[in-house]
Image (cartoon, rainbow, N blue to C red; front, side):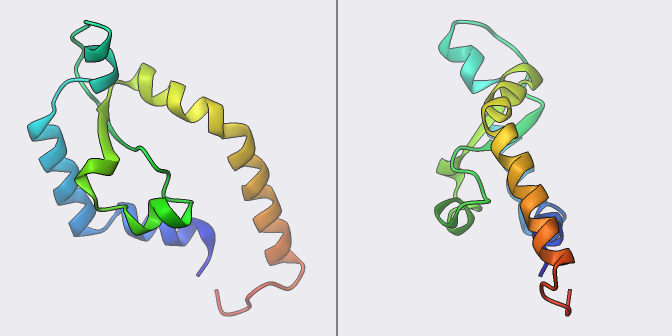
Length: 104
């Protein structure tokens, strides 16, 4: 299964959408902002342990691995990982072009 397809299938699954809705219902405010004494509406659910790691994938449906975040905090969490993820995506695509799994 290709890298992007694996995560797209997960994020479009009924189980994820229901868990995401539950997390928003129970934590509608940004959890990082609350730690700083600010009240800001959450707009996204973030995996504390990224799902592109073995541990994160294993715990992708674990409510304790999720946090409600505003867009600013969510972007901040991903900025630190973005350059390494971009490199990984590029490497993965190159491997596929060099004769990776032809069953994708």
